Length: 281
Image 1: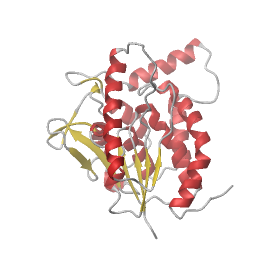
Image 2: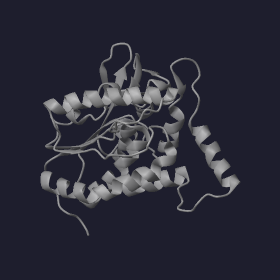
Image 3: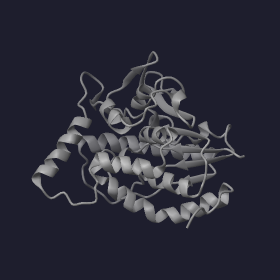
């Protein structure tokens, strides 16, 4: 049986686009042999590698984010949700970033029993960056939490992580969609890139956080373009997500709404390029 590798890129809340993709992979009956992920892509990759289906991951996120399908009109309901997110988005102590990442990770991984890479059902590689050397650092064994926390440590937003005798930051600085980590071991590679496309014509001065995240997006898009010029995955999918800021988690449903109309085309491409099948109607 031929092996399929899945690379899930970072992009904050835009990475929620990975969930319709995972659901489409499940419907196609494709079995993923290995996963490589960066930042939020690494977190969702860990959830999938633990044995959760794409549908189960969506339900988990809907539950924790309060997306119950009902309009939250009452002041009490809105206040409760705000307090919940404030608890998750912990402010950093000391140097390095505005926020700490461990609260978000514990929030997303609280129902997973696996605490190490070895416990996962699908092999997972998590991409991080050594702050002081600029080297790409891959984790595929040992404890999950510190590797995932380091992978999503966007400079200036989330505090760097001290782990494995290194100071680590977001893997997107060097390899935001790590399909190349899978090409030697897998026959097919599926790469999901959720970095934003930049649109000219906006002359509004960005805020401090927008400036940091915008600079980061420009950097990782440039690195990705150079990477695609020399090698390419079997399937490359990049949805164009409008008006979705990196850490605006109120836009989860907007990301899904913008991604889902693209799934029929992706399903056909997966079928054509990975010797898959259409799956159930």
